[in-house]
Amino acid sequence: MPQPNGDATRDQPRPQALSPGRSRNMQANRRVDSKPEIRLRSALHARGLRFRKDHRLDLPAARVRPDIVFTRRKVAVFVDGCFWHVCPVHGRQPTRNEWYWTPKLRRNIERDQRANAALQEAGWSVVRVWEHAGLEEAIQAVLTAVEHAPTVRDRSDSSGVVADRPTAQAAPAASRLP
Image 1 (tube, rainbow, N blue to C red):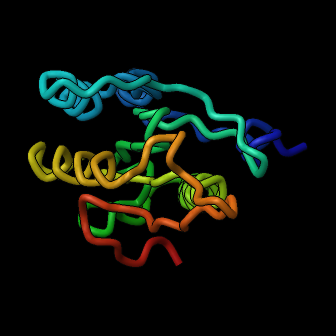
Image 2: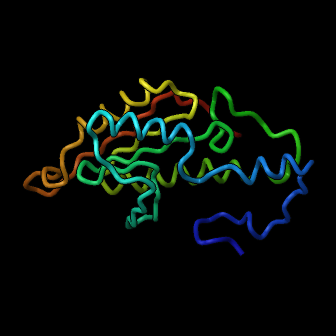
């Protein structure tokens, strides 16, 4: 039975780890507080920006949990890992247990696309930064989105219409898994 977020991985058999070391390595992967995320948060904080980290947003279309959230400006920032989100520069097709990893990674991409769509539909700006992106490049992408986003009180005109804003990225988008 698929999970509420559409991820059926928990019901599938999991591949056996190639070694105890590989098992420890995979278990050490963190959902929050990755090194690139911490570096970006620290740099943004040092520049005087205040935000929420790993803050769940209950939107009409979906629940989304960005890595960094500027609630007053409605800007959501994700720091995507190259393997888990299939980076166009460093992402690669799995060579072991591809029966497990290929669908898993494809679902990650689809979940990212659904999250972007739900956020944009709700009037949020989305910034996606690859973990390999340079710190200054990532900071600039976030600063641009925050500076150009009106505060929540200023978001609609007299008709109540909210302008649609595209996703900002700190690395060029390219094709992902087929």
